[in-house]
Length: 162
Image (tube, rainbow, N blue to C red; front, side, top):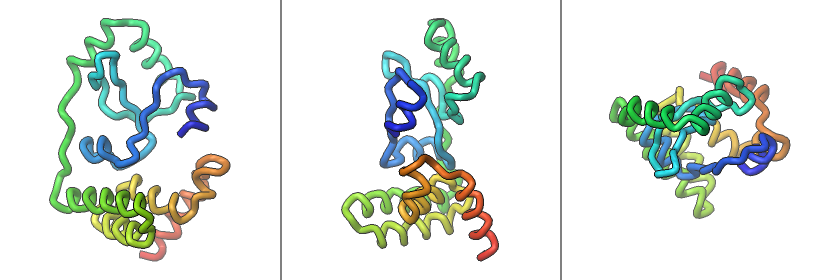
């Protein structure tokens, strides 16, 4: 995360949900996403697609930082997180979490097996897709930045295998 944070000249705290706790709670299926947490530690804006090069995103963040009434308005509009919609989605989230734990203790193959089971249960979950790809092909994610063209090609190849 640090290289992208630094490249954006970001002057805000960045948190990484390496265990996908927040992602699971909010039933998130894609990354990256951003959230806004105020100085009191309150979530004031649910997860949203974050792109620090997007002027609309920058304008929203600048308004939030400069206008205390905007924070109050966002707090009023906050809704509780959505829960996984089915037992299948819940199982997929649990298998994804188990895979993260297995990887953390050095059991890469077992982690990959859990993630593949999770992906079979929730094939539209891009967090699972990208976790598998990042472990299998770290050069496409970490060395020179994320290779989105490669991801698109990979996704097409996976579709033709089905």
